[in-house]
Length: 593
Image (tube, rainbow, N blue to C red; front, side):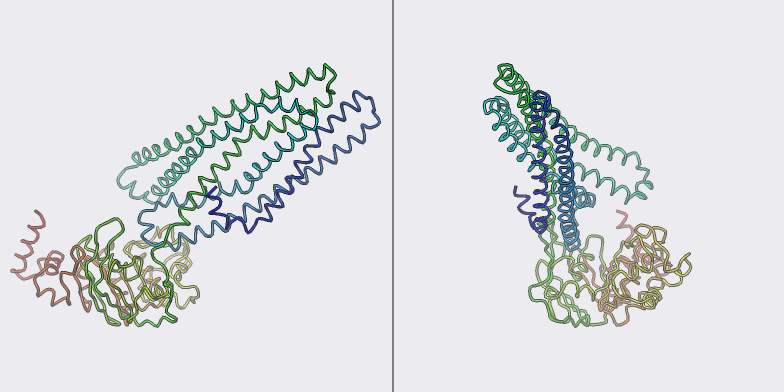
């Protein structure tokens, strides 16, 4: 029961709902146990004793008992629902909150479909147990205990004969639990895989169609579906073996009861009414015992779901607020890297001994081949990851000593892959600010050179963009992302290859927008194109995580090194002197090899 002990903080605050539901359950069970004795009176007093004048009173007692039982049963069901719903409400909120604050390191390996499955199906399985499963287990023990006691009060010898198979039923149920738990865990895993396959396919449907891979995706989904079906069939096989055995053992109890009890009636050692009452009681005992597998099913599913929920709740976050947060964050934007190195968890080093001093208002261009460490550098600046060694400071304060929320509000980030929410353009631009006016939104859009195309849309700023911004061009989405970043008025602006996916004309428009918003802000520009960084105060060239060159555009060209090589490849050789054309041909020949 370790899972339930670890999750007690979610259901214990609402224990009074559960206790009240259990009280109603006890009353329901007590009233249920009245029926066998009413049957006994009906047979012995009215049918055999011919005291028909008592029939009306007995009928009224039956009706009253039924009404009360229905009332208490309704109360138990309603309170059980309140208990389960309130408990998982807090749990679901905590899970979502945890997912919001987990670092990039966690999401580097997490699967979206699996997380969705945990937040929905697993939470629901746990709720089902809290609402109904726990009451079912209590009802099992309560009904069996009270039923056996009442049977003993009628005839202890017949009771022993009747319940001789009950221990075998219990032993069988316990063995079943040990086998069914791994089976349900496998169902949870395969369901998560199935959900992940659907999520990835829907997200990447354009890629699927562009490569004509529909058949491949159908086959991949079919394999996941097969795994899910196989897991369910394995579980169904276990159930199919369990239930017939349980029913057989239960019927054995009834046969023994009728054989021995019938003999007692014939020998006048027991009244017919006692035997009928006894038969009714044995079914009240056998019913919950035969349903024990179902109750174990609920318990096992809840336990398997709880284990998966705890995996998320207990995941440690490596990016956390410091113990002693700076009382006030007065940033100007002076950024310094002090001998910074970084290694991704489970991977090789990404950056080595980076030193950089970027005064307020300066622009740094970061250039290098794919995998050189450009994005890693700015990810560290935003503290999406923590440095492995060294430190990064802003205005002399280590960024690890700053409040994460306050610090990140001072940094505006525009990623290479722009993500827009399925809402209005107005909401997307204002996403980073909780209180912003329409005028501020329009000013930000104008600075990002986005206002004109927005006004051409059917509903202007109230136009709803499709999922992930579908319906807008790459350049339009990038300009909206820029507007979203600058509306926060950040001290530091990070542009992570923000123009790599657009054409030259759109790049020029975006760069025009960027020149508007970079004024007075410390800016880091990650790029593959020299046109994006050549106006920077300083350009650093990375290769395999190390700074191999640094300087401004002209000084780096004069070095005749990596930067010059990239420059000559990117620019049209017809615009270069003859000597440089030969250099370009040589470089292209080397690249061709």
